[in-house]
Amino acid sequence: MRRFQIEVPSDPAFLRMVRTAVDTLCAMGGLDEDGRCMIVLAVDEACANIIRHSYGGAADKPIICEGKLEEGAVAFTLRDFGRKVDPGRIQPRDLADVRPGGLGVHFMRKVMDSVEFEDCGAEGTCLTMRKRLPAARKG
Image 1 (tube, rainbow, N blue to C red):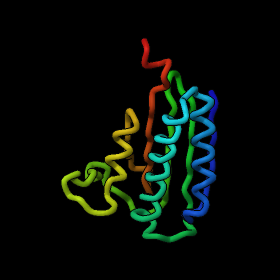
Image 2: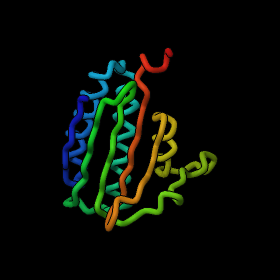
Image 3: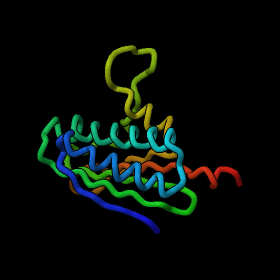
């Protein structure tokens, strides 16, 4: 299994490292450039949500990103240690409500095949997103 795990501070300047690692793993899985870009954007949006909602904009808190190639899929898990989020309450904003922001969860669910928020224990939230690889869809 091919995998990576990196920890970056919740400073948006460090998200480039996450985007590069996500793109590299997606390329190893055989995704084309368009597919890779969409997944990179979904993971980047999830990181931005962690910074904004879990850490209240603080730039010095840890974000752990794990990526792995699974049987026929690529998976990314993001872990934060900030404000706990009730997974049942995470809903995208209504698309008819036209205004900036608030569409990250909608975008993640549109791009990825599964998006799962989990309680990670004493603090924080874990988000796991999976996307089937092209060869896995043909069967």
